[in-house]
Image (cartoon, rainbow, N blue to C red; front, side, top):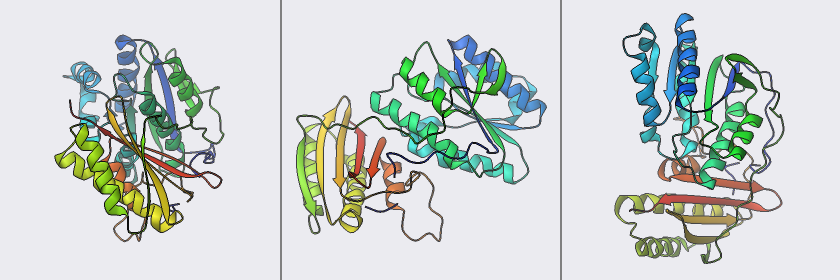
Length: 320
């Protein structure tokens, strides 16, 4: 597979106009203190702010902003539209900082929209945080504040966040983060369920891939538009295996919690850690498949090395 390693992508250089700042807080009052201070500072500097947080936090901020001059410079991103998949967030931030290129200084506030993330969701959001440093290493100057609720999140998730943010807001002070590490990203290992179903595939077998997934989905009540979207995504991944990943692959399916999992493995190697996370340009040739997959699935996990090949795991939320 070659939309271009993702298991050990190299860390970007630390010097960047992008200010990526962690804000560990304990409870709603501290969240409001840090976020509102950030917004008022932005207003004082004539900077625009895009806020991407869960709906309860959005309501809190809207209430605090009501009737203030700072409210005029704040835009809220509809995280319900982006869904559960952090693979869709970087394009949203790239769209926002395009305003900086138009002469409008910008900031952002970004917090995971999941109230109780699964292990897979927490892991992928952590990887998204790491990728932000790479995606915006050459961007115009802008500032992103990332609140993390230490009272609600697992300590491991907060510790992982500390390693991904070069800057830290603590005790009301903005400054360098001594816990930040500039090193390749280390993924947790992906292990398949013991009761998975398996289907080898190769050229001419995409119909069998569709039939296998349809049968599994039907047993769990997944049908209609969501099933069609999954089948499109699955065929994109399987087709990439056939074209770029040695001509063949293995599909494994199972249910994990509330998700139907479709996992594809082949002998190819993806070299670009941002593959599928940047919106294709109008004149771009190739490289659109994994972008489409990110738009269609609730979560996408990609692991790839030259030694072990590529594994792509598609998550689709089951009804009910």
